[in-house]
Length: 305
Image (cartoon, rainbow, N blue to C red):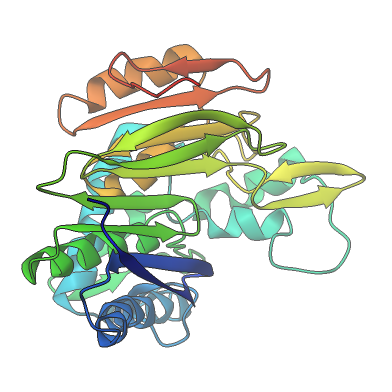
C-alpha cells in the first residue's frame, strides 16, 4: 500500500530545505524540525552575524570563546582536511573574495602575484584550539559553506530517528539529499542530471544514505564572458575544470566535504583517494570531468534508464 506524505519547504543556509514526512504526523512537527536547523544556522554558519564562526572571523588574531559543538565541528573538519593535501581548506575565504564572489564591481582573473600575496592566509593548520577557545590568523577567514548545511541535516536525521520517524526524506537545495527508510521494501530514489542542461543521467536508490553533489554551474562569476566556478583549488588558486561530483555516504557532512575536496582531482586521483577514504567511511561516488566523461567507484550502482 502506498504511504501518504506531507511536505514543507523553508529557506535556510542560502538554500530551500524541503522535508517530507509521513502524513500521520501533525503539521506542528515541521516547526520542531526547522527550529533545530535554524538553531544550527544561527550558531555555526559563518554567514550569520553573531554566530560562533562569525565571531572567530571578526576577531581574527585573538582567541574567541566558543561552545563544545563549535570545537567538535572544527576538530572533525581539520582532521579530514589533512587528507586532501591542501586542496580543501575552510580558510579559503580570502581567495573566494579575490575572485569576486562577494562584490558587484568589475571582476578580473587574479594574477599569479595576487594569489601569492594571499596564499599565507589560507591554511587550516593555523587554526588554534585551546579548550573552548579558538583563534585563527590575523588575516584569515573561515567559510562554512562546504559542510555546515550537511552537518545540520545529520543532526536533523538523528532527531527524527529519536522520535521514531522511520520513513522520510530531506532535500537541502539539491546538493544534499538524505533518505530515512526503515521497514519498507522500496528505497527513496534520486534523479541525477547533467549540470549544464539538466538532462537525466541516471537514478540512485537512496536507502538510509545521503547523496552529496558539487557542481561548478550552481555558483560562478562571469569574467569577460567566461564563467568561473566557485569551487577553487586552495593550492593553485584557480577553479576546477570538472563539471560534477556526487558522493553517496552515511554521513552527510563527510559526503559534502569529500564532494568538495575531491572536485579538483583527475579521474585517476579521484579513484585513488576514494579507495583510501572508503577504508574509513562508507562512501561511493562518481566524477564528471570537463569532457563529460564519468568515472565511478566500483560500488557506485546507479539505475541506468
